[in-house]
Image (tube, rainbow, N blue to C red; front, side, top):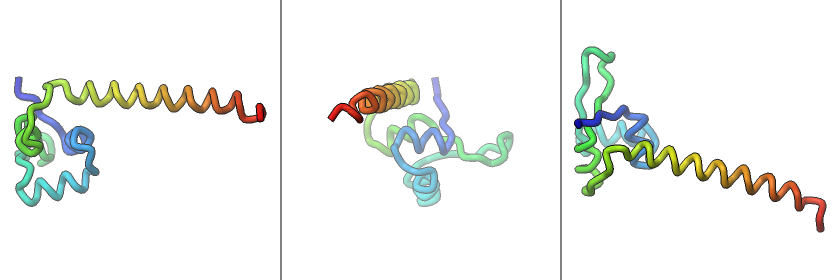
Length: 90
């Protein structure tokens, strides 16, 4: 399967801003194509992201990132609840 990413998805995978991804695209450091059917938006193949990072990534890398973000959000919520219980304790 040839997974294709948007600039926003690629930024999430790389941990960069979308502006930084556009910079790498314009410099040619990150390979992509532009489609006519989708308004000329960049389409970045999974393989291009792997080449940019010089490492293999799981094809469902976005799912893993989203799961990690959900876990972090739950941890933050739990911390806020626990902190709220102890605010007046001391």
